[in-house]
Image (cartoon, rainbow, N blue to C red; front, side, top):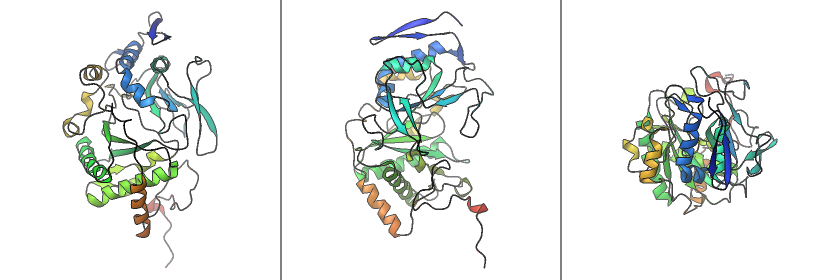
Length: 348
């Protein structure tokens, strides 16, 4: 595994144990490679995480074939999501207290400097999942996240086409969106918003945005929560704006055999990119040559009032709320969380 090595990251000394431990067997990438990768994309990863409560997706044994990721239903696995800051963290690893839908709270790491990312990578953190809030106000999102998720029978090209429709709608709304690959087949679009609305309101805005896309491209885009109703379309996952739902950050590695990266891209290049081309080996050179495609993301923060107006229109037309994730408490105005094919039919 090799002797521990030390990195000087800003003013901090970060110790990396077992640097030669293989994290991605299919590519031969080691823990040292993961740390070096995050240092190479320093400005980008820190821009994505700075001051945000962040869940670490830890793979301490590496991303080997057959490895199991623990879930809410089954807490045992080779990898896991760590929401609470680990005991013994250095004093310079800051935290923020967030509240879960259950009402419980936790102190999550809240990166303020690059050394925190390197420290987390030493713990086996492959992917970072930041909340769409800042530590200064953990109850009001400052980021609208649009998650375009291709369903079976569709692919990345379909998600990119849906993203093009989203760009047109954002332009009409006077909003600026910043796209990135998911590291898989999907596309994420981030829009900075003013932190003046609650999670419930921002989720409502995300539903309105998705429904407008669906209205414009019904053969391509869907907001149907139940998989049996989606068909071969691109799903706008509006519940990514529900409290305690997170997306892999920009520049996060993904736990797959190729070690792909969720990579910011420009709107012009999005239709032509191949997401598998962005990985641990290729993104540092791209970053050094082109810089961060999300460099201007913090320049303007938008109002979501235009989207809330669309939501009001939808409600007047009989399209109210949509189901929340199953671990959330029942919300006012939410429809039944029953799979349509299993819903009890009315007696006639």
